[in-house]
Structures are given as structure tokens and as C-alpha cells.
Length: 235
Image (tube, rainbow, N blue to C red; front, side):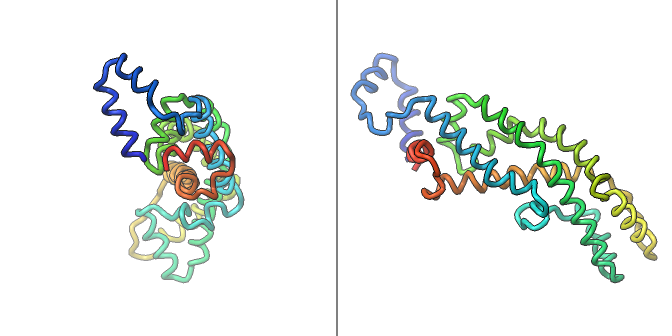
């Protein structure tokens, strides 16, 4: 269906306005009962569902930590820290440090919903058309383009404060001190705020993409009549 629609769009671009009008008057009306507003609203519903079903889960305790799709692991430069701690029997301390990073991400993600809602409200029919004819991640990409910088600016200070609130700063100070005291290791002193901010954003978009793909490919996930009608156009 996507290929047919795209081919038609290419052909239409080569026709005059009069020819387009003649085709429009004689083209079968099946599937055309949806207005532009209905199509746009259907895509908005899909994004709202992604936020309700997936992003909200990330804000809960262990929303990141126990979700293998988005669990935040240590950056590459700190993996040697984790290995060093585990080698000397301090695996539980490494686990505690990783959990603290994920707790900060869970805390920051609570700031995402109003920003997403605002971006969804601004969606135009052209946005909706591009999403409908796009790939399985097109709606998520739209949100990413509209919200990434705003979310980063919002997440970053929240994560920094969350490190204090959940004790991540103290945990990591302890971890780094212990690691730096291991003989023959190269000392490290990382700043994790930017890393966790970006990982949290990636996790949020990844889970919205999961829900979007499910709506596009699984009829049972189209939970409203409007979702069923709109996404039938891309089947």
C-alpha cells in the first residue's frame, strides 16, 4: 500500500491542476472518508498511546533498571572500573552504582510527558501524512526532532539533582575512590551527567518506537476506532 501511495504522489506531481481535478472527481472514494483532521488526530492518538503505555513505565522504580531494552550500563571508559571492582569481590558495589544511574534516569523521565504533549499538539496534517507514509519509526522520529533538545535541557539538571537525591554522587565517589586505590590501575574521574542524560533520552524514544511499531503491525493494538481507520490506510 505504501509503494502504491508513493507512486501516485510522484505521478500527481507531473500533472496539471485541471488533470488532478479530473482524477479527483473520478477516483474511487473508498478510504477517503477520513478528513485531514481525523488522520492527524489518529496519529496524535498513536503518540499519546506510546507515551501512556511505555514512557510512563520508565518513570516507575526499576523502569529503566529492569528493562533490558533501555537499562543504562556504564560508559566504555568506566567498564574497566566495573571489571576491576568485580575482580576484587566488590561486584555488589558496582551493581549499586549502575542502579543509581538508572534511578536518576527514571526520575528525569517524569519531566518528559508535558514536553511530548506540547509537540503532539503542534502536529500538522503534513506531519501526519509524512508519518503515515513513513517507516515503522516515523512518528517517533517526528517526536525526536521536535523534542530532543528541549528534553535534553530539561533532563540534564534533573539528572544532576537526582544524583544527589538518590545518592548516586556519593555512591560513585566511593566507587571511584576504591577503584583508584587498586594497585596498577589508571585513575579515573568521570562526569556521568551528560552520559546518563543521553542514555535516558535514547531509552524514552526507544520505548515510544516499540509502541509505534506495535500499533502499525498489530491490529489488536489499535485500541480506538480512529486508530483502526487511520492505520488501515498504511496497511
